Image 1 (cartoon, rainbow over the protein chains, first blue to last red):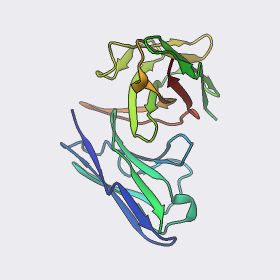
Image 2: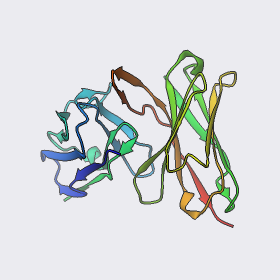
Image 3: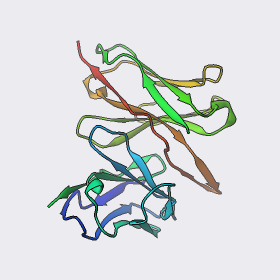
Length: 103
Length: 125
């Protein structure tokens, strides 16, 4: 089975900061990688699919990149509503999540 | 706008069967797409449970396969989850979601969107 490892597990940042979250697959998965945002008490929300394709309505400050085994989710300028937990997903495996907190 | 809504008992006794339904509005299940169940234990990450196609084909998480049954009722536009012989470890928020797929032979890109709001199921006597 392919394992997905996110780093860091948690991250403190300030409004306006540029933040990058990493997801690493245990073997090559081409571009088959998705990113979700989850806020407390809410269902996950799809941000990016296929490593870099935006879901409709996702702000342009979010971007996804990578292929093979290493992937990134970047938020170019953090907004207050971006503080949440982020998950990567490949096929039916999710990463363990990255909690983004306010510094 | 597609919307999904989970429903079912919030409390299940150990060794009994957990039963949940996901009602879909704004889209006819019989028109296509795959449909999935995912759960999240308190304070933990996300775990895929299983997926069903509108034709009835199913795919299950190997770790749960012996206890899971997912079915679809296109006449009522809903799909259902049954998880047997539950224990406290099955306490979780259960989500249903639509599962788009793109096939690029030999691989498949699949994701979950949209999701239902989730329903907490507690296993306790």
